[in-house]
Length: 335
Image 1 (cartoon, rainbow, N blue to C red):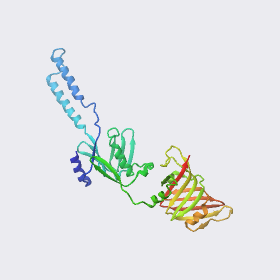
Image 2: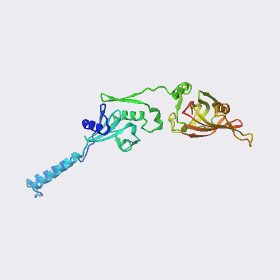
Image 3: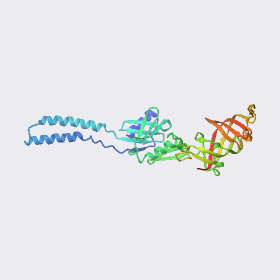
Image 4: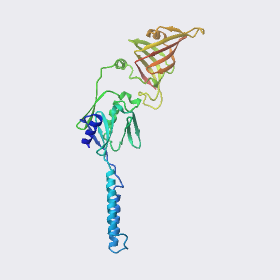
């Protein structure tokens, strides 16, 4: 099978199959496989009984031979339909093999669907092919497959996005080895490192799982081109990776860091004067910082890598809009 697979991979995918692991699935028993044998035994028994004179003749020896030939042909057909099934894991592909000539090949990076079914197990597919992996048949090989898919972000589970990373996949002595490729520390990782000791629950992204529930800006300042706001509280939805429960939690002593922001506008309106118009402030970090401290976030609207925030600060309403490279949100405690 492997020799034929190597030829197939070279021809169809221009891929040399040098490193691979063959995972043999547990063979399914076909309870109807020997039915022709059992039927022929019954025919022989009846023929033997009539030959001994214990019953009238039912059929002749010629009929027995014809029945035997037909049942034998049917037996061959049943055996021919049984194709041994196996999985082949390579550093780039996962391959489902049916017999020695039929192969379904999926590139890890082109997986578009990941699903777990109670009936058939793990289902993965690209645009044209689908592979099912039974946890019963491949129980010993499922873990490295899922590890690969998590590392490549192909489980499409946002609570597992932190598992996504650049990895090198090697298969040595029939063992799958997943080695993380160390990247130069990003600016986001450096920011997380600066505040991690103070805020143990500190995660980049997932801002749509955050509700600024009348959050008070206890302190606002900037570092380089980053806006840092320390808040008294926020609400964290159940979908956030740091919230492992089934309900929202209220986090306290919080921090929100908007990295490398690009300000679109900063407007301020004095609510004491009903006729006052909104004043347009310079698109600078200081315009935000100097006007929002001790204010309350009264409204917000998320967009991709951007946000609009309204602050009720004293007798003023401050409206800001900016884009950002990344957002980092954390807190010290929750209830």
